[in-house]
Image (cartoon, rainbow, N blue to C red; front, side, top):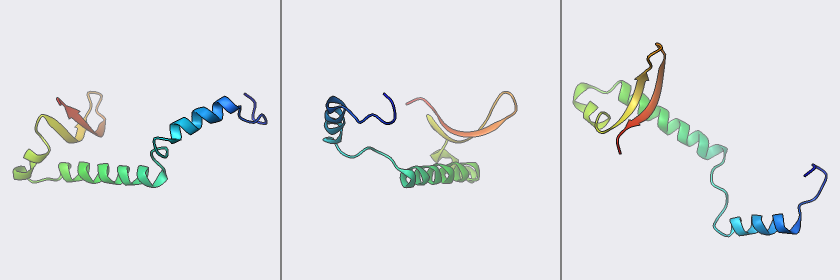
Length: 80
């Protein structure tokens, strides 16, 4: 489809069907909030004192990660 062609009726019906279930998820604000929350949890996990590490180091590990090549990152890993 070219940029100057209007949407077809079937495309608009498909769009309306998707919108019946609610608006599209996510916007810039929700993405920023998710990044901020994830960053806060990772920093808290990295600097937690020994008695509080049990909150982050169970079957599901949240926090900083060291890679084989020498890099450092952050993530969520483990067995669910």
